[in-house]
Amino acid sequence: MTSVLPAETATSSAPAKVRAGSRRAKRRRTVFYFMAPATLGFLIFFGYPLIATIYYSFTRYDLINPPQWIGFDNYVRMFTSEPLVKTAAYNTLWLVIILTICRVLFSLGVASVISRLKSGVGLVRTLCYLPALAPPAAATLAFVFVFNPQFGPVNRFLHLVGIDGGLWFNSPVMSKPSLTLLALWGSGELMIIILAALLDVPAEQYEAAELDGAGPVRRFWHVTLPSISPVLLFGVVNSMIYALQFFTQAIVAASASAGTADVAGNSKLIGAPENSTLTYPIWLYVQGFRYFNMGYAAAMAVLLFIVSAAFTWVLVRQLRKSQHQEEGA
Amino acid sequence: MTTISAPATKPAPVPPRVQFRRRWDRRLGFIATHAIGIALGVIFVLPLLFVFLTAVMKSDQAMTSSLWPTEWHFENFVEVFRKAPLLEYFGNSLLYSALATIGALVSAIPAAYGLAKLKWRGQNLFFMLTVAAMMLPPQVTVVPLYDLWVRMGLTGTLVPLIVPYFFFDAFSIFLLRQFFLTIPKDYLEAAKIDGCNEFRAMTRVLLPMARPGIAATAMFCFLFTWNDYFGPLLYTGENQDNWPLSLAIASFRGMHHVEWNLTMAATALIMAPVIVLFVFAQKSFVKGITFTGVKG
Image (cartoon, each protein chain N blue to C red):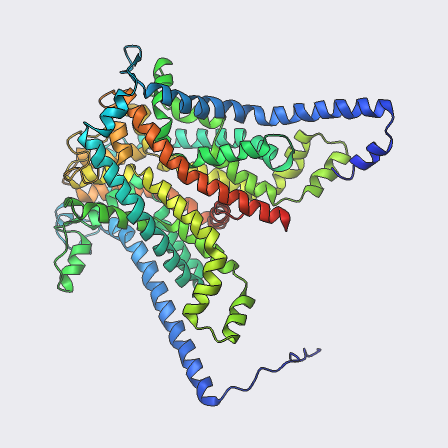
């Protein structure tokens, strides 16, 4: 770009100006052709439904009869008279907090072990990443089997070392921790992102810190952490959003551990045991697409939007900051 | 052969006792980290191994707590296909994933090019909106979208799952943009000076250079759609003929709820394509993932 422009501004005669104008129009057309399909798609499949969701949240709508304006009734019902939405919100909040903390710390731990390996890095990295690729529905079935209280391998191993294994997915107390374990098993993606960041920390900084007499703990605290903190923040926000939309694993685990799995989901099995795995997105799905309370589901979606938008905003801001730093450098 | 001279500043001499201790610390550290590394690798793979081992057991052995099959029944993998129309589900999955991946590439390549290589007002806003669309849970927009597809009479088919990819797939746009940014602008400038327009510059110069990035994006899109459960549950849930594997596998146990061995055989079969894909294309996968981090 810069190589062309100066020559043109040098000859600032009238025809050149016209040409520059038509060039700008041509440029604008080029941008239009490149961006039009994506913009159209964005508006139809993202912009419109986002706004329409807000409208529907003020209506009663069952897909058959036209939406009927009821003001804030859906929200009032959500916050006062419907107990299961609170259970669902509590379960999701539990996952957002506990799962996020565990996922980030666990990924950081595994990544820092892998980053220290002198040989076999590729192999170990592959093995740790493999479960993250498995389809969540299949991975959940595998996990429910492995953690089966009666004949699952985990409890059998625990029995060998003299520990009574838990009920895992079959107990309302253990079901969410079990889901968390399942999520940790599949968190290979975050591990690889953190691993890449760890390997990017300049070796000279470690050497300098070592010469200054810093031990491994101090080196981790003063050298490693500051330089990977943007990636850790990404991990936190990413995990929170992951937990916020926790759906497949919870719905499959509930029905698989309860004995029968039914895809369109036997309503009685959803959230089993005792609604302990009923997450917010699952209840939204049940309200909207099983009970056809579309307006109520939309109100739940609005709340989900507000919370996840807040998380996303943090990430986007961080992204912008790191971009500015790059441009400035 | 020329010898390389030693560094100018010699480090201060370290007493032999300290040297000895340090060497042992290093060795212990080496052994400890490698032991933990191996243990981690084993722990991560064990559940997959148990799936496989159970898949080849006799059905009554699968109901006991034994870990190792006494007899190896590899025909269980065939039996699964007799019990459920897995091939049809496989076909549906393939149709969904392949078409969605093609669609995502067709729509995301120009958009990512526009974001990475053109300059225009509103560019930053568009990029931020793309990131937002990528991050927001699908449940946020699902009510009006479902309504839309019901009115078009297309629920029960795979159309609502595939068509959006031909217009806008936030993750593909984001990932491709990250890859395109790494390709120096000079090549495109040279092509344009030689008389190429933007479109030719993209197809003839940038795309061949960005081939690994495009491959990685395609694989992620394929993986995501192959693994997708929520979308198919929503749109094809009523119509079993159009179920992809992910839905079928979850209901498989419902149909044969005592036969853990067959359930695990089916589970292994649905995981297999993904694992094969990964083994063959590990490098681009890893590169793609690190690009999704905040670095770009």
